[in-house]
Structure formats: C-alpha cells, structure tokens
Image (cartoon, rainbow, N blue to C red; front, side, top):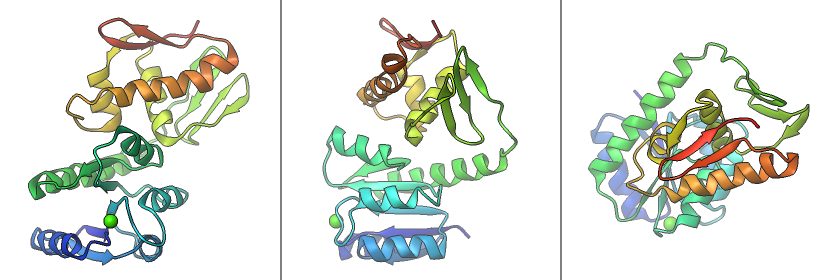
Length: 228
Ligand code: CA
C-alpha cells in the first residue's frame, strides 16, 4: 500500500483529501504546518507528498528545499495562485508537479498515480547511467554532477534533468512540448514558458560564463543541444 503524506493547513481540504485518498486505498497521514510536515516526511518516509505552498511555521517551498537534501519522494505542490513565478520556484526547489486550487479530485488522483509510477520505474531502472560528454562539458547522471573543463557547475534538479535530456538528444531539434512531457513529466497545458525560463538558467550557468554555445534556439520548434 502506497503511503501519502498531506501537508495542508486548511483543515477542510486536508480532511477531504484524507477521506478521498483513504477511499482509494492509500495509507494517509496529514500534518497542518510545515515544520511537523517536514519531520513527518523524514521519519514516516511516504511514497508521495502533497504539499501546500502557503503553510504556517515553514513554507511549502522551504519544506521542499530541505526535504530534497535527503529524499527524492515525488512531491505534488498545491498552490492557491496561478502564478508562473510560484510554479517555477516550487519546481526549482524540487517539486515534481503542482496543482492550482481549486482542483478536481480526479485530476489530483491521476497525477498521484503518475507520480507513484514514475518514482517506481526510476527506482527500478537504477542501472548505472553512462556519463554524457560534449567537449569539455561532462554530465554524470550517477553522481548528479556537471563540470566544464573540470570546473563544477551547480545546477538545480530541474536544470540538471533538462540538460541531461538535451545532451541525450544532442544534435536533434527538440520541441518545447517534448521537453515539457519528457522532463517535467506531463502536459503543462501549453505553459511552455517554463521551458524558456529554464533554458535561460542553463545558458546563464554554462554558455555565458564559459563563453561557449551549447543550447541553440530552433525557430518555431524549440531547442537543440550542440557543443560549439
Ligand atoms: Ca495553506
């Protein structure tokens, strides 16, 4: 039985989710603030986390950031605001997915199933992945490190996942939609500016400081990784 931890201070929503998820056959625990939620997540080791963004004691963003030091549990963030900067911040801190309130329970249940399945398959596919290189740029999927001519490049998890995907498809034009589906894991309903934001981050951390061109814009399509 999969364990799901709900960290949500709105009692009505927490109770509703608890009932629905229990009914679906999940083992459920709830916490009403960020601090106890973080402690519970570390001690109880749930298979998936539903995390509200606005929480007392410790914000959802902060819970996410701290949790990511020790855990790769799938995290679905709940946000009251349909704001790109909130989404980007949540995803940047390592959340896998988010839902804007109010949401349909069926959609949340579907995303929970996707999150759990993805997590299981990534755990099962734990064979050592090969190191990717492009000139002086080296990405090691095992140690989760990137370096340029031996100089470490600090990337967030999403930036790393995006770069890895682009390097795996080096020389190919990849569409924004393909990047959203394959890197972010589901269809963002046309919200492709998240991709553009992350491409900017990568260029800022690799192309600009090292004076190279690795990520090329392909007009009307998307992007292509090619070391020059
Ligand atoms: Ca809240």
